[in-house]
Image (cartoon, rainbow over all chains, first blue to last red):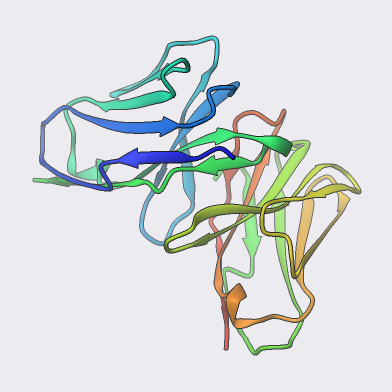
Length: 111
Length: 111
């Protein structure tokens, strides 16, 4: 059974810092990996989708990498802002397109 | 929210009563999903649909049924609600089973 782990569970940084969120998965036979953002009391917003054939995907200040062989993905956030404060979730697909989610990293960016 | 609405957004009901949650999309996406989100368990798939009248079970389907009579609507029914079904329910859609887009969620409380 696929297991997805996100470290750290919580992170607090001052505004302007570059930071890296980590996601690891146990079964490397995935065809993509998706990163989401969730604000308190809200739904999930898709940030990036990396296909298994890709190593990186970029959107604005966000850069996600995928290393299938080691079972890892990282989400890099450049020049963090208070508005980046949220919970970040990674997810990988399984049987029936079911997404298996990590527990999330709760990020706080302090002004 | 990628053209996804969920109704109701909040509901309080009593144990043993039937409850139906609705997910409506305007994207004409083929795939639709129902997840629940619980502290300590993260997001888990309940049921999904890969076309009109085509549905299948997810990881935590016991006590739930679904129906999809039109492309745009996916209904989740709790035949006899229990306190263990108190949760936040999210609908998601996908054009091709890859990237998934989530709705705003329904907070259900079963007393």
